[in-house]
Length: 333
Image 1 (cartoon, rainbow, N blue to C red):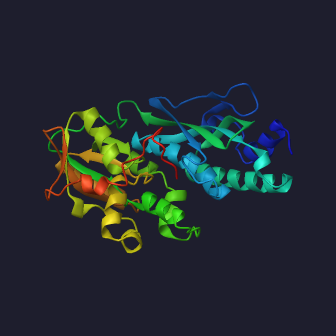
Image 2: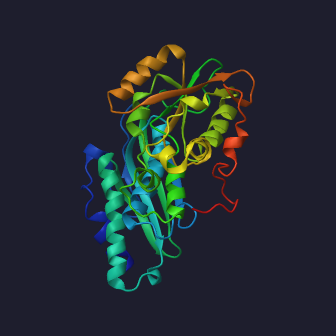
Image 3: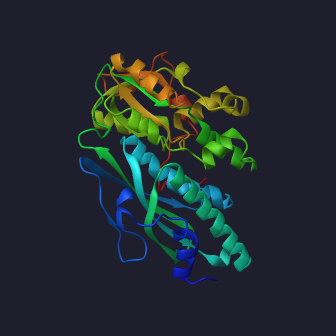
């Protein structure tokens, strides 16, 4: 087995660009810390996310998907802020004893690194440092991005009368997890791809600057995350269940009721939940359409602080079995 620093050089430094002023890295990997230079007029947006085997992803998940997913869920937080991703740090903890031999270890690391680096390249994100250590499999990713001063999206700007909208489609994450539990392992299935290979909506977040009054990403489930946004903005919400955009194959795979439960409370969708003034919705939809993305209105903000359905149906009936992600609750993938 390679020593720690040989492993880092082999899998996590070889594909990185040299430190240059063009990507804001004045001192990159190989020293005790990295030196970065944000662009003038930009605020630095920073977020950290931890992915733990058996908690955030299945133990048997493909290594490529583990690497991709660990970075994707962290980048999703930058998307929710309207930030453009620039840099990341990655701390990998893994136990080589879980592999049959050194060759199996190297194959896993190579696939993991490929998944991580491929997504870095897709979003112009430079890996500028990190750590590798021995222990139960977990990945900590810190992402750093830039957003023009005063233009960051936050959770606290929604007002009564604003429309509530989501990017893309809902329920794919929860539906994919349900399929995994049933033994499905083919990543060609759209639901399984949505669960294991989520796509952070970074370009959507940037496009919604100046239009969205509030925003956050949907990681714990629409109902749970809408509750966070409502609390931050001190508004209520009325949801149109019939308007929910369901992920491809979700209803055919799970049936109507289970599909709605997954869309409302399944989690792991990593779409953006936003509020907008009614006059701005058409412009926002046009911006996203030009990027090949959709923005669907699913409700509106209101004065009472609770949440209800526009058709007066019992929303709690769609939450049973999908309570939204809660750490320390015993939930496992």
